[in-house]
Length: 455
Image 1 (cartoon, helix red, strand yellow):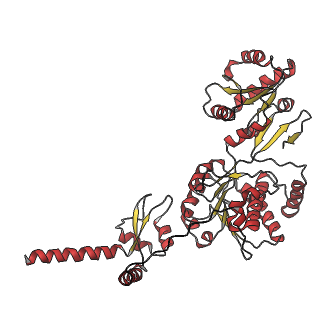
Image 2 (cartoon, one colour):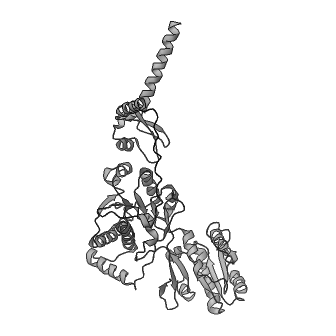
Image 3 (cartoon, one colour):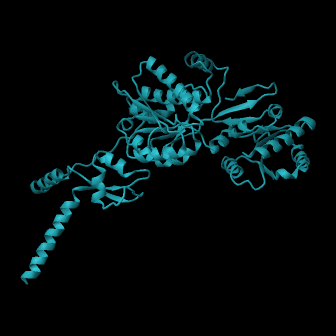
């Protein structure tokens, strides 16, 4: 009996000791792109301590793995907790305060607010490094402009390609940022989000449209490049289904662009007709289109394709019908057409093609001319669209922080800043998601070989 009591007491004390031991550690679930060393820096402990505690043979860890992290303050915390439990028996605990509904009316910028803005670009990229340098040059001009207006600002610059990712992202200086512009590529945006998921840092994806996939993952993400769907939706205001016959022309078997466009038209109750064909059908397509379009007083046609060979063929057919048969055609396309080298430029102007673009600089605008003059004077060169982009992105977000403070995201509707080549119109689907840009610049080719920016 005594032996049984002895083992009972032994196991009881062992259980208590193990419980006390467990309370001296922090349980950490490994996130994507985290390493043993970045986790050690986060908790300000030695990586070797984590490895020994978790019986790690190597420094390799995997996503979702639970690690015990030494907590040097745990003993003190436990003593305080025990004392509280012994001295306080019944207490009416205060209810947590409800967070007020945030709106632009109650966002007040602090007078001493000096935002820390970090720019992360792959300057060492051997292929596109020059483009990113120009982006940075444009951003510097915007920052200087805001400083001249009286905005206090701390600007930090990091080269994404210069050091290991975990060292860059876990660095103390970057962690102090209020706003991070960059990195550039979608995968790198994902890595950055994984480090700052639990922070209030705003992260701007300035160039890669594929980073849209991360918008739902981080409420502080701003996706600058608009989606293909946003481009297609921007064309709706220029359609006149009551006076024109609306058509969608697509490549036979196309599974992405045409179905999405048809869905957009259906959701907006816009009637249309759909015609698809194989580009190998040749001249017979022209005859079919002549019969379909010739009976209408006005045809508004959207070529729902990003395939250069198909777009070139469709434009050629419609141009022939317009010129030789006087069939009325108003043609709409997509932004990728601007990069197609085989499109007949004369046909685009004769058909008055309308294109939705993510960026377009109107050189007749005074702001654009002034920027070009300043850029030439300072950098002794011509600004590319990367320079315009850097200026627009920096100017927009600095204005937001300057006018509305660190929570400027609640005032986006009031943030109407004239930009050089962008229209920024951000929206979020839910409070837990980030912001997507739906702002599009729509242009029209004119018969006199000029291009106009549509309202």
